[in-house]
Length: 169
Image 1: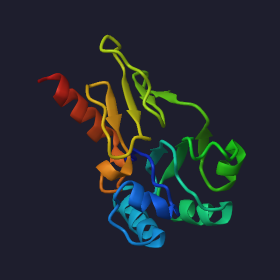
Image 2: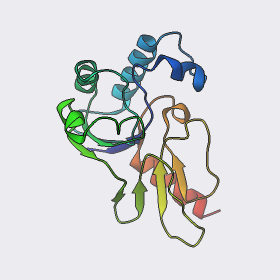
Image 3: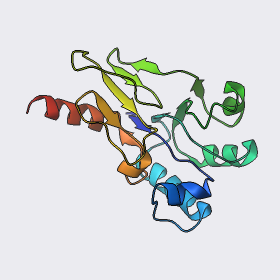
């Protein structure tokens, strides 16, 4: 049975993100290899992964080489660092699907790169990235930036279960 995962903000090839976000790597190459290994440790070939943006700083050839090494069907929701390239560029780089805008998943979850404003009366949850090590408070937000998850995609089942547990408190 296939599973669904969500993750964001890999920044493959981005040397400066190591310092910006205090990532525990010396080089971008070391970081890239670790992140690929972490992805493939949890994602199987038949699984689906929603990547919520800021995937790669490499050119198309190097980005495609990384995408090809990652297990699963890959759906990119473009982030601020991805939008300088066209939707076609990302499809050519190996993503199975690409959206320039947030999407609604299972009629309840907003999948976006940047957090979307949600007031306490809205019955939805925003699964997002962009803010890296920061976290928004409240039950309406779930940050899937790699820094929070040891660079592993988070199963949608785990996200749903953690939200249900929070609601029961």
